Image 1 (cartoon, rainbow, N blue to C red):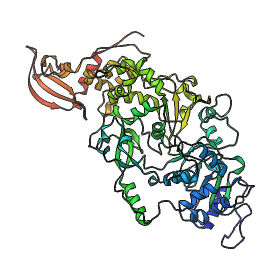
Image 2: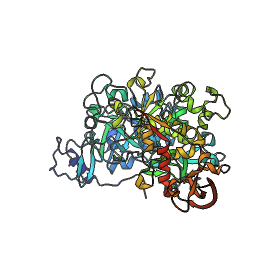
Image 3: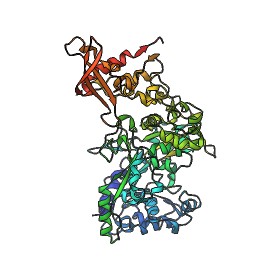
Image 4: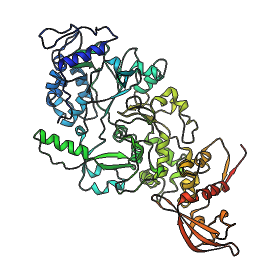
Amino acid sequence: MSYRFIRQSRRAILGACLVAACGGFYACTDNYDLDKPGNTPEWLGQSIYAELSNPDSKKLTGTFTNYLRLIDDLGEKEILSQTGSRTVFAANDEAFERFYANNSWGVHKYEDLTLAMKKQLLYASMLDNALLVEMLSNVSNGDNAVTKGMAMKHMTAASSTDSITFLHGVDMPENNSYWDGYRFKGMNIVMDNTVPMMVHFTNEQMVTNSITTTGENSDFEVITGKPYTDGLAFIFKDPILKDHENVTCQNGYIHQMEDVIVPPGNLGQVLRASSDTKLFSRMLDRFSVPVYDGTTTANYIDYCQQNGITNNIDSIFQLRYFSSRSQGLELNVDPNGITMAADELLPYDPGWNQYYSASASSLTDMAAMFVPTDAAMTEFFLNGAGKAVIENFLNGNPNDAAHLEENIDNIPKDIVCALLSNLMKSSFVQTVPSKFGNILDDASDPMGLTLANLNKTTAGAYDVRIANNGVIYILNKVFAPAKYVAVSAPALLDKSLSVINWAIQDKRDVSAGGLGNFYAYLLAMSANYGLFLPDDNAFGSKDDKDSWYVDPASLGTDKPRALRFWYDNKAPYIHCSSWSYDKENHTVGDSIASISVANVKTQLVDILNYHTVVGKG
């Protein structure tokens, strides 16, 4: 079994090329037999490998020695010489010299590249199908139906086994106990086992999605740092050379890049590698978890056996994040089988290479993150709106820069999640700079984001970083969630108010056993509420039964009861028991039974209503 090679006849790829060219300037009716020497159309070149080996100056510019060495070293020569249906985004040797002169990997010549680096450079610049530049934004709807102008990314030819890394204990998240069992011995890990994506910007896709390309501070220029030239297509931030695209070969296409495509990694990787977003990344990593990956493990063992490679790896893990969307599904159960609270789940997994929102397809959109610099985070927690938050959880430390990481780690995960979630948006297309005014916070009010809030690079460009699954806007300030300042904020920040906070934060629909929309009502900054907050002792102090909630609905029966509620740190979180109540003496008697919270939600709604006062606007 091969994990990468797609066998296809030369005649078949010619057919694919002809079909792809229909609607352009190639005929679809000519019939060529590639088995007969010299019987090929004039516009059809040689194989991809042959074209790169002997570039025609009318089609390609420069030489491609470095790119060919990647192909040779990784065993792809035969495939790119004879069979398959590929698209390569190749850079010439001049581009590689620029890469060697300045790159984050610290390599200065081809010989410095490790095997893993070679795989990243080649497979991140290759698609396992044949696509003209003008077809990049097309989305297949099945049955040969196509929607134009929607796609902004495609799966690369990379495999999860290409990115296996040995993670040492010192490189594991410090503030996360799920990693503790591996710190001493380390682990083999992939950052995600879904295929990394190639992000592209084409004119048709940007026009279709109202992403501006003209005028001062157009969306395109803010995101890439470059003004847009009509007709150009970009891979991440680098252009495909206009006169050297769509080089048609017998087994696919070559699109020549201005620079070498260096895969950026996913959102989690980009932030982890950035020197100025360490605090935000540290917060994200509290939600990370190593998950054993049986599929990648089996594939790698099989690959080693087929290729005669000595294998010392018996277990490979993925780095994933507890979230409402991770590889298309909710990841809410930890390795110990414990279900995570809903308010401890990120809105999506920033490590999911193929991320797409619930309302989009895997090719048509990606995520957006608005990430404050470490300087902005420091100011927020030491002197800004975050000061009132962090000072509830100092555990004896001073609130200063020297203790900031430790103090942030002390903030409960649900409170950290509220901040992160406010800055993680599900759609890049809907949050480009021209649409900043439409971005809402957790209270569904305008966040107030403007271009002035974007950090600038030393070169004076807006600091925007493109990952393989989303775009990161680097901010010079922190936009706190409404949760931190709304009337319900004290319940969130004070852990002696856990029962009433659970009731307030319950977002489940009434039909699903939820308590309604108190969460949304109490976040609304345009409204005016007063809120009385009973502490946990009022619901369930063992030492003061007389403070328990007397169920008013039971007072008219011959068996009146008092209800005791208490909070536990794991699902189902809220527990309830009923006790006999003497309404003449106003005393609580013996225990009657445990009660499912679903059976007393009416009482909880009453409590919330009784403790909420609607003021004048």
